[in-house]
Length: 147
Image (cartoon, rainbow, N blue to C red; front, side, top):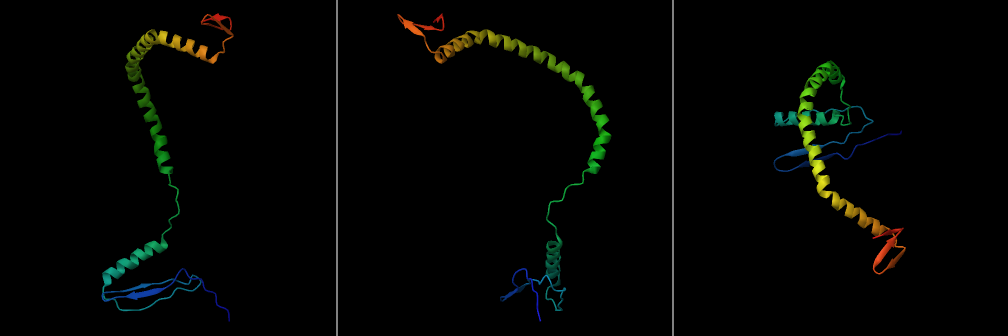
């Protein structure tokens, strides 16, 4: 006779002065089994078995959300949101115009103040990245330019 067993762990019983604990590892190939006993505390047992049932029957794999209802609502709201956006466009453009003018003015002032710095920077990097052709009396000559 051949027996096939497939257990999901080890069964155990432990007890102390105040309680007895039992943990069962079922044979997954066997038909369900039952036992009959008297309980000392009905409510905690019921809660424990209810929690155990929730764990056993739970499926913790990722379930994609059903977003069909959301997309239907969004489709209905699309015209409303578009109308709000178009209505706000003129107000926003009026707010942006003076700010854009201020920004342009600040950019012009910045260019005016930093223009000489940028020219010197350009000249410096032109010198350091070029190789002098020759020097004469502490004057370096770069590609037909005297600096």
